[in-house]
Image 1 (tube, rainbow over the protein chains, first blue to last red):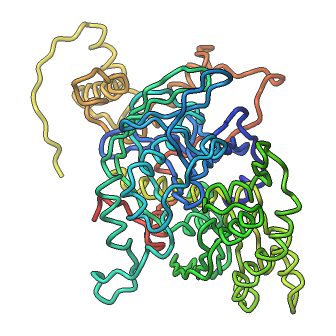
Image 2 (tube, each protein chain N blue to C red):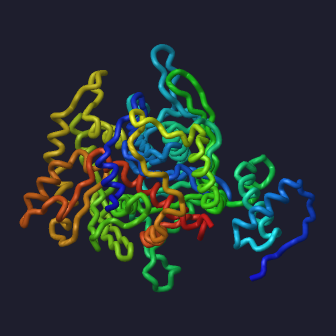
Image 3 (cartoon, chains in turn yellow, orange):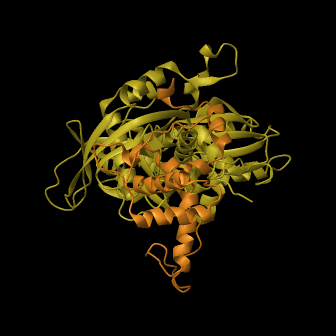
Length: 402
Length: 133
């Protein structure tokens, strides 16, 4: 019996990459046995899944040994400062800017990057520089050497940016929203990003990434593919319909998914964990809004107080009991009424996992995990959309090789 | 459909002439010397194409590498089996001792082993390459 990608990854687990200072990098133990490069219009290109989330960018890439590597870097950056004594921070020089990104930026008081639609975010130079840095980090973590690389980029976009295709003349087709498509064509497709990556020892390496093709896809679709498909693309789930609740940092989407044939429609039902993060930020006495820093505090349960990084477990638990319960009530409202199999996923699962499980199993009638619902595990939920974006690129490219 | 052919007169050493004559007895489907020669040149050409990666010329002599592997594999694998049976093992083919053997691992999936329906399922979810519009 073939197993789904989620089953395989969950069973094997992962190991954190030591010394990764920009966020979280994981090396997944179970090999998916997918080729790390594919043919695209006469050249070998590296398939990459990129989830351009409001709170963090996630990259999924296969090492040259075919092993899955994921990287999650909070969406924050700042101009790199000169460190005159002590250990340096890794930096990225891109388009005349020298940046610290992710957790490094947040530890130094860095700013959040713009949130919102893909088109408005991509118009920001810093956001594009940030994405280029994130892709370099994904490749470097996967063992690729500096130099020129061509990428086939699966690019996750908010579910609401997929809509009915007006040009399809009555057929039930969906397509990427026009403004998103234009922004991806203008800023990403065919782009060449030159990045000089300097590590904490001061060693600089030049990377040049060319985006050979870009494949926009709704974020939740990544989870759907990884949950329903084996690595060879075969559908391994015997359920005809799923209700997927994707609790992200910025937004929560609910998607009705059919597997025979594959179709998906999504609705934004709530904000994501951002409401919890903002409540925590206010509770900590911060007055200047910084969503990325607030999410960082919620995720790491630490905050800078009086010049010291302190644990804030009590504050986080208080927020989980108040804002967290409000969020759970909103996102589970339909799930608790539905007769469909409910799949809960997204980075928002991490702080809410236990309460969600308790609410589902305490419902009337009680919902049983595995029979009525499933929750993507902690380690996988925040990167699964990127893993699915990688799968989508590999599956689609396999059909176009001739 | 008739295959397009062209005449290419060549001189062969006597050893090759004898090899061709000998092969005819073993491969009844190759009914004359011309067909035996054609099969030899084709197989030799495919082998050479795997190393044809000089910059400035079409890589793999113009073959798609996946197609090249698909054409060459069935012809080459019996030859590799033959070499193994007779003690010829490169480092790649040398079997590790049971003590040092890694856990069994499935081979990497080539593009041709991806379920053809997977791409259609991806499209059903509203996913397509941007440059294909």
